[in-house]
Image 1 (cartoon, rainbow, N blue to C red):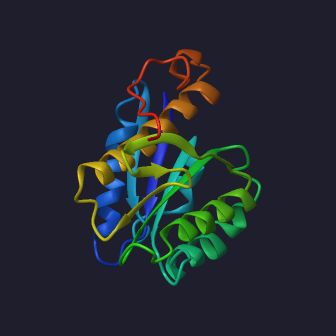
Image 2: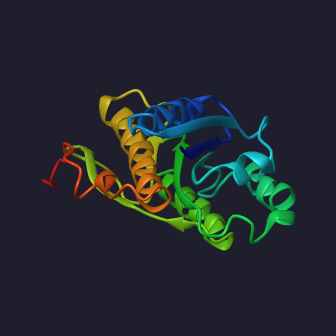
Length: 185
């Protein structure tokens, strides 16, 4: 069985709500064990345990939260090179549109890349105007159907990549497995 960790920091509860939806999406793929952890309860062992990691943070001035940065600096720093080759993605909630959530996702992906994670974007649309190329983003809580779908799609895609690359299950590849994919426009 392959393993997915959804690790998040949440100040207001909005990113925590996203994390639950990301975990739900990951659970849609058979043979994936999913662990949901807030940063306050997480340890390095959680990250070492997983094959794939969805990393979520509130948007703080267009970047990841200081608590998330500290976790990677202090908690994961001693485990440098022990997570190389795992698969990762990002999600973030901001106070409003234009608050920098996509930049926060990019800062999360940059941290993961520095630890050797293989990161990805998602081309699928979650709604007519909702994409998640850099990760799932919301303004405040994920209340709309499109925001919720984006979180679930991100989790499902992470689990699919983990199944393909870590579990050798080619049939889970998103271009092989028939799923409902919405084209742009």
